[in-house]
Amino acid sequence: MAMEPTVKVALGTASFAIFWVLAVFPAVPFLPIGRTAGSLLGAMLMVLFNVITADEAYAAVDLPILGLLFGTMVVSVYLERADMFRHLGRLLSWRSQGGKDLLVRTCVVSALASALFTNDTCCVVLTEFILKIARQNNLPPKPFLLALASSANIGSAATPIGNPQNLVIAVQSGISFGDFVFGILPATLVGVVVNAGMLLCLYWRELSDEKCVDVAHDDAVEVVEEDDVTSHRFSPATMSHPRGRGAGQIDGSGAPDAAGVCEAHCCCEPVKPDAAANGGDATKVGIHQRRGSAVGVNGAMVTKEEEEYTSVEEKEEEEYTSVEEKEELAMEEWKNKLWKTCVYVITFGMLVALLLGLNMSWSAITAALALIVLDFKDARPCLEKVSYPLLLFFCGMFITVDGFNKTGIPSSFWEFMEPYARIDTPTGVVILALVILFLSNVASNVPTVLLLGARVAASAAAISPAAETNAWLLLAWVSTVAGNLSLLGSAANLIVCEQARRSRQFGYTLSFFSHLQFGFPATLVVTGIGLLLIKSN
Image (cartoon, rainbow, N blue to C red; front, side, top):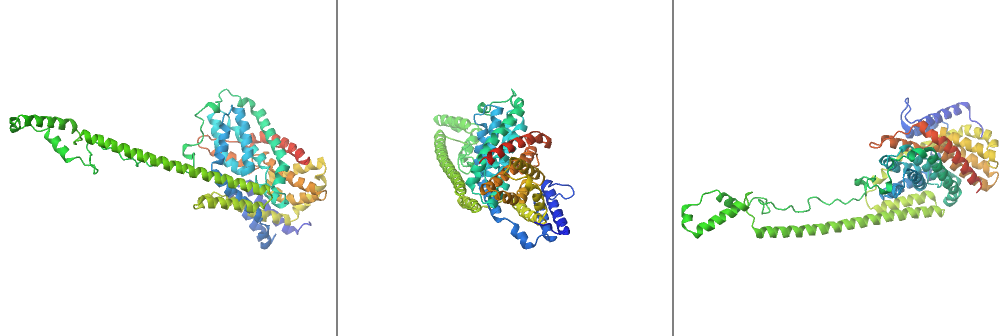
C-alpha cells in the first residue's frame, strides 16, 4: 500500500499518537481523560481530519467482536452471582500444605479461570481473595500477586474468549473455537508450569518461612466475609417471635391487671378491727395479703395456672414459628441451588456451542439472554456491571487503528520487516515474535493485533494454509504472553496492582520494577517455549 499525502499522514499519525498516549498513560497530566475518552478522541480526530470518512469509520467498528465481548461479560456477571469464582477461590485454601503449594494453586486456578472467563474478570474477582490468604498466613503478597497476573495472562491465551486480542484474532481469522484451543493448549499448559516453576525458584526462601500457617488446619483462615456467603441470604425476622409477658403485663394491652393493683395496694393497708373480729375471715384476709405481697411485687398478680398456660402458649407459638422459618429457609436454599445449577448448565452449553463451531458472538449473546430470562427479575443491576467503557474503547480503537492503517505507515513498516520475519524459518519466527513483543508493550496488544494481524496472515498464506493458521496462533500467543513483560503490558497487570493497592485491610503496592524483575525473564522463556510447541503442531 502506497503512502498517503504528507498532510494526511501527519494528521493520521498525530491522531493515533494521541490515542496511544491516552491508552498507555490514561492519567497523563496535560489531558487526564482516561483510555475510553482518549480512544473516542482519536476516532473523532481521524474523521475530523478527513483521514477516513464517516462511513468508513462506521464500517471499521467490528460488531461481531463487540457482541462476543458483551455476551461473555454478561455471562461472567451471572457466574459471579452463582458463586463460581468463590468456589474457585476456595480451591486455593482447601487442604493447602503451605506457601509453595498455595503459589502453585494460585497459578493453576487463575489460568483456568482466565481461559473461561477472561483474564481481566479473573483478576478483578480473585485479587482480594488471594491477598487475604497471603496476609492471614504470614506470607509475602508479592509472589502471589505476580502468580495471579502472569498465570491469568498465560491461561487466557488458550481460548478465543480468554482476552480481547484473542477475540479479534478468532473473528478475523475464522479459526474455529476447537482448532484455536487445541492449537494453543499445549503451549499454555507448559507455559503455566514453567511460569510457576520460575516463581518458586525466585521466591523459594520467602515461601519457606516458618511463620507460615498451614491453611488446611487453621479454621481462622476463612477469607470470605459472612455477608457474602450467598447473594440470596435468608434473614429470619427478629420480631416474629412473641415476647414473653412480664409480671405486670398479663393482658394483650400491656397494662397491669387492675385486680393486681388493688391487691398490691391492699397489702399496704392495716388490718381493720372488724376483719379481726370475724376470726376465720381475718385469717383469709391475712393469707390474701401475704399472697398479694409475694406475687404482686411489680404491681401485678399472676396466678400459677396463668403462668403455666402462658408458658405452654409461648412454646407452641415458638415451635410453630420455628417450623415456618425452617420451611422457608429450605425452600430458599432449594431455589438458590436450582438457579445456580441452571447458570452452570447454560454456561456449559455456551462452551459446547463454541466448540461445535457455531457463531461465537451469537452463542455468547444467546447464553447471556438465557441467563437474564432465567433470573426472572429486572436485569438492570446485572447489566450495569458490564464494562460499557471497555466496549466504547473498542469502538474508538477500531476507528483509530483503521485510520492509521490508511496512512500507509503500518504497510510500509511490514514491507520492510517481512523478508526477515517469515514464519517458515526459525530466525523469521524469532524476529516476528520480538516485533510483536515490542509493539504489544509499546502500543498495547489489541492495537498490535489489529495493525499486524492481516499482514502477518497474508504473508504466511503465501507459504501454505497451515502456515496461515500457525501465524494467527503465534500472534495470539506472543501478543498475550507479552503482557507479562512489564506492569503496563496488560490490563490484567494493572487491575491486580490497583486492587492490591486499594485494599483497605491488606493493601500492598506492586511496583513497576519489582514486576519487571520477574516479568522480563519469565516472558522471554515462556514465549520461546510456546513458539516451539505451536510451530511443531
